[in-house]
Length: 135
Ligand code: NI
Image 1: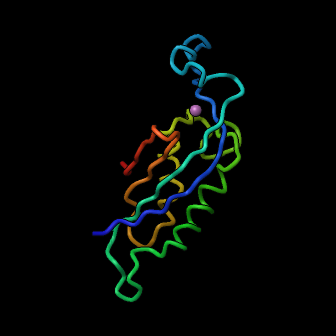
Image 2: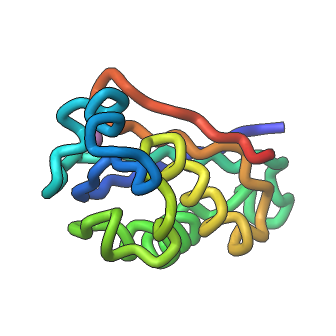
């Protein structure tokens, strides 16, 4: 088994807010991250595919192909967007790093046909990142 990873970047705004809770409770949970008009991050994702090299190509997955899948099905939908408002697959969820990573997995997984999707890492800051490996 070998692991192949593609890194990608997007910039987006979000607000951490649970509409079922009071303003006070939201501030208690999310502090300044719940400010009404949101704030931005320069996010990075790392998408890792696991598999064995195809004997014909030597690739688990052609990284050019993986780049296109990531751009078409995730980056193009979130880059320079407000994640709470502009992104259909993030409607009704709190756009934490955890939930964005899970949503990214769900967007990409149906399109990976060479190797299998092994993990999605989402870096929200230099020091904070999450990793999702499916259910
Ligand atoms: Ni934030």
